[in-house]
Image (spheres, rainbow, N blue to C red):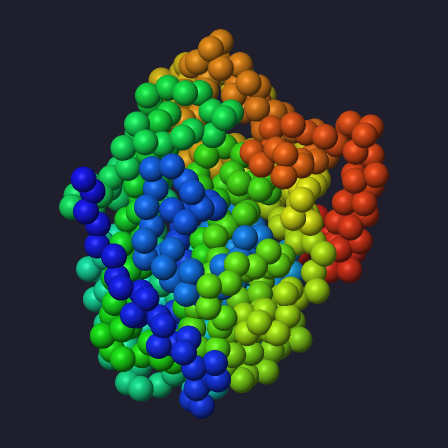
Length: 500
C-alpha cells in the first residue's frame, strides 16, 4: 500500500475562492514551473501516476486542456513567459550560457563576465522589471536560464534543492524577505529534468512508480528497460508534486492564501524523441492551471492559451498596465468566468535551436487549432550524415557529447543524461519496427507535417501528403504563414542581433 503526503488543498484553497471579489490589495503570485514535464498528471488518467497536490490545486481553480509552450527549450520558454513574447520577437531564441543561482550578485549585473550574445532585447520590458517598478518583491528558485541576467532583476534568489524541504525553506525565506510587500516568485521545480535517477536518489523516502503499473505510448518498444525509464520519469513527476505541496503549505502557514494567485505549468515536454526541443505536440503541449482570488472554482477550459499569456494575466490581476510589446493575452476574463476563451482560433509554437552549437540549429514552426497540428520544418534538408543505429551500437556514443539538430543530447542514448528509451528502439527495431520507423522519421523529416490530434494523439501518421487532407493543409499553412508575416518572424533568428 502506497502512502503519500497530500496537503489538504480543499481547506487550503477554498478560502481563496469563497470571495468572488478580488482583494483590495494587490495579489501575490506564485508561478510553479516544472521542468521537462509533458501533459501528464494523475487527474488526466495516466496509469501509475499520482499527483494529489497538483490535482487538488487545479481542481480548485481553472485547468486548461489546450495550453502550449512558446518553444520547447528551457531558456526560450522562460524568456517567453517573462516577456509575454515569442522567442524570435524578444531575442531570446535559444538556450544561453549565463550565471547560475549560486553565483554572486556581480554575475547578475551589467559587468558580469557570464553574458551570452543571445538574450532579451534591451528595449523590451520584462515582467520582473515591470513588477519591480510597481512595488512588487520578486524571487526565483532552483534554476536561472535567462539572458541577459540584468533584464530579470529578481530581489531574491535561492538555489533550493530537489527536496520538498529545500523549496519549502526557500519559500519561507522569500516571504520573510518580502516583509509584507506584494510578491511574485517563480518556483522552478527541476525534479522532472534528466537524469531521473539522480533526482530519485536525493528523495529516497518519496514514493516511486512501479514499472509494472505504467502504460507505454503505443509506438514505444514494450521492453523492461523502456518501462523502467518511463516509470522513472513518472516518479520524478510525483516528486515534483511533493515539492509543490510543500511550497503550498508554507504559503498557508504564512497566512497569504487569501491573496495569492497560483499559476502551475511546465516549461516544455518531457525528454524523449519527438518531444523536448521539438515543435511536436509532445514538446509544447503542457499542463496549466490558475487558482486564486476571483478565479472560478472547478472549471476545465479548452481555450487555446500559452505561456505568452502569463505576463499579461499577472499584470492585469495586479492592476498594472500591460506593455505594448506583449504578444500574449490576459486570461483574466476566462479565469473569472466572463468569457469562454480569449478569441484565439489557433496557437503557434516555435523551435530554433536547443543550444549555441551550429549543429543544433533546426528552425521549425508549428500551429494547432486544438484538433490538428501543422509543422513546417524550415531546415528539413539537414539530416543525419551517419547511420542512426550508431547511437545504440557504438559504445562511445553514450560517453560523448552529441548535439544533433533533431533532438537535444539528453533525448539520445547518454550516460550523462541516462536516456535508455531511444537506445531500446534501435536495439529492438526488428521486434518493434513501427517505433524504429518513427524515430527515423523524426530525424529525416519532410518539409511539412500534419497530424490529427483527435484520432492520432501521439502524432504517428503524417497526413500532409494525403490528398484527403489537402484543404486542412492549405488552411493551416495559410494560418501559419500569415501569422509569421504579421509577427515579423523571418524563420531564421540567427541574423537578428540583440538590441542594446
